[in-house]
Length: 137
Image (cartoon, rainbow, N blue to C red; front, side, top):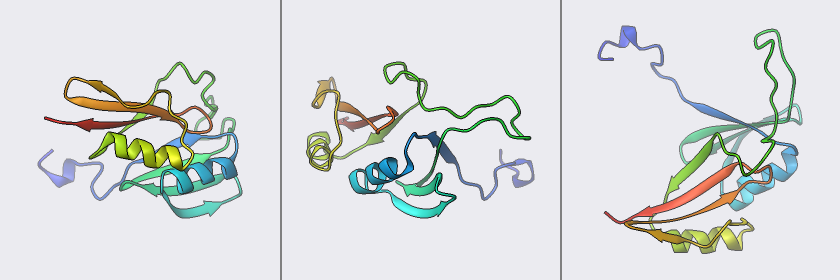
């Protein structure tokens, strides 16, 4: 897309919506453990966060609306079946692991070396999967 007139996303930003069961519990995790910044809170059931130059919108479960008539927002039904996850490229996986673990993140395993990559995974309170990954190229 070289011609800005043909770019439907000029001056836009991407926001990821995560459905969470408890806004306060998730707020504590994303702010206190991951270090996200609160941009806006509204309605007691929604929270906009800035995290690593990206936007996260945390919302509680909800049903259809007039603009998404057959769509339900639900928390992940099974934390072990993933259709969406986050990978955060870090400088030092072991150091990041220790810091996040000390802040309360619960990891699936300690960092594992896989070739030129060291990585490990953790979940938010509702089971959304996060990976921290160090690549040594």
